[in-house]
Every structure is written in C-alpha cells, then in structure tokens.
Image (tube, rainbow, N blue to C red; front, top):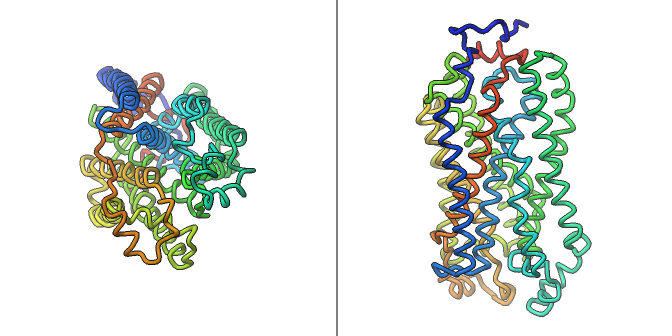
Length: 440
C-alpha cells in the first residue's frame, strides 16, 4: 500500500495550512463557552424561579433531554470511529479525525450528569425517576408499585449509580484510546498503532453496544419503570447514529467552507457520510421504531401498550406524527438520490434537519407520563376524551436554554480538540486510499 505521509510540500494536501484549524474557527469555541454558560445557567435559573410557568419536574426532564442530546452526538461519533477500524475502512480516514474529536468529549461529559447526583442527594430524584422513592410510589400508585417492586434488585440507587459510573468510564476509555493512538501515529507513522486499534475494535464494539443499551434502559426506559421493551437499546443506538453522523457532517462541511481539507475531503466523502446518515438516521431508525411499535401493538399487553397510548393523547399525537414524517418520510424522499449527498449545503441542511428531529424524538421519549388511571378505562375513546387537552410544553424556553447550553459545551470541546491536532490522521497507512476514494 502506498503511504500518504510522504514529504508534504506547500502544494500538498497535507500542507500545514490545509490540515490546521484556522484561527477564525476558534470564535466558535468562544461562542460555545458563552452559550454553555448562558444556556445552562439560564435553564437552572428558570427552574429555580418557575419562570414561563415551568415546573421543577419539567425543567429537570428538559435537562435530561439536553444531556442525552449532547451525549448521543458523542456516542454516534465514537461508534463511527469504532466501526471504521473494525472493518478496516480506507475511505473514511480523511474524515475520521473529526469523529475522534467529537467522541473525545466523552472524557468530560460525565460532569453534565452530576446535577442528577445533586438531585438524588436532595431526595428529589423521584421527580424524574419515580422508582427513586419506592415508598412514595407505593402510596400514590400501588398497582405500579407492585410491578416495579419486583425490579428493585436492578432499579435501586446504588446499582444505578454504579452502572452510570461504568458507562462513563467505558466511553471515556474508548474515546481516549482511539484518539491518543491516532494522534501518536501523526508523529511516529507506526503502522502497529493502526493494527492495535483494529485488534481491539471488536471488543470495543461489544462494550459499546452493551453500555449504550443499558444506559438507555437506566436513563430513559426506567422513566416508566413498569414498561419494558427489548428493542429500546437499539432504538436509542439509532438515535445516537443520527446525532453523531449529523454532527460529523456539519463539522466537515464547515471546515471545507473555511478553506481547509482541500484535496483531502471531496464530494465522494460527502456522499458516503450522507449515505450513512440516510441509512442509519432515517431507514434503520424507522425500521426499529416500527418494529417496536408493531410488536407491542400486536401483543396488546397492557403493561406495554400504555407507553405508546400516552404518546397518542392530546398534544402528543401531533408530535408522534411529526416524528413519522420529519424523522423518516420527508428526509427519506429528499435525500434518497445521489446529488443532495454530494453537495455541501444540501448535506449540511440534512444534518440540521435530522438533529432537530432527533431532539423531537428525545423529547417524545422523555416527557410524556403514562396516566396512573390508565387501567380504569374500558375503551380508547374514554381515555382519549379525558386527556384530549394534554399539552406538550415543547415551546417552553427552558427546553432550548438547556439544549443550547449542552450544544455549546460539546461544540467548544470539539473545537478545542481540533485546534491542538491535525485535522486528518496524516500518517495513517490508509490515508492514500481515502484521498483516491471514488464512489462507484
């Protein structure tokens, strides 16, 4: 295999000016820090004061959604890096450093989870996870307590926080493992580093899959602890791919627009990034979503159907249809052809579109609560009539304050990382293949 790390000249794609983050891009880092401070600070201020009619419970769930949004961006990027090494892909080397930088935020993102520890310490965690106070659950909803009590060996504070710590350690270790070896290769050009990353990508993929699934069970599915779905971990994984690939696309298109990566990242790479977003963010997500819904609908078990029923009542019904069309049908048709994936602005539009509906998806997962009296109704029309005035509070400013705060933090972290290293793995043995890459 020919190597792309031959002597770089001023005319070479690997010239320093072409693979170094421009100074003006650091403005994004500063804006990210400012956005994080204003967004997170403003969000917690709204939660404390009850401004805009915000309840404390809603504010904490809004923060959970924002945290999951930022986390999913990083996890999706980590999956991309892992799978590229697993299959020994050559085409993706040119864009892999961007994914490595996004994933590296997993080294510190656990800090954004600490507010939940404070909430737990104050004895208020049952505002989010009702099983956190089993005595209160038994007093207020004996029927649900009867089901949840049987899961207490899994759903208890000690085990919950032990698992959370394990997830963050696994993710931080994997992100740091790939990034540190990749950057080390920039200096040494040692092929053994590529072989090491390939060797451990199999176990890494297994660890990634297990950790992301159980994190979804713990942090999202247990919001309705009587409900269960064996497909839920895969559903969250599809959402992470949506967020990760969309973020990669936006970063790559932006770097190209700043005049970097000339002769390195081409429309061919854009097209493959677009194909991944189309396949995982639209098709695979829709397949898992439909399969989960269809199996639960067909089985018609009350403990399972109530979760979907709660998302068909009142204002949640339009949000459910918005997901169907916005997360799948419309982008599926808009980006099924070749050319929108090869054109930077249209590909960036796809990234923004999918990130928006990924947020809607997380909001749809976290916010609705199953009515406690759902088992007392004889017909669907009865419960639909009683709860027809349910509102989603989707437009509450606290939702977007927390969202922009987390995005700002992740964005600042990513730009900071990219400012310290080359924008491509310049001595990766497969970089030459990536530079020559063409779609068939």
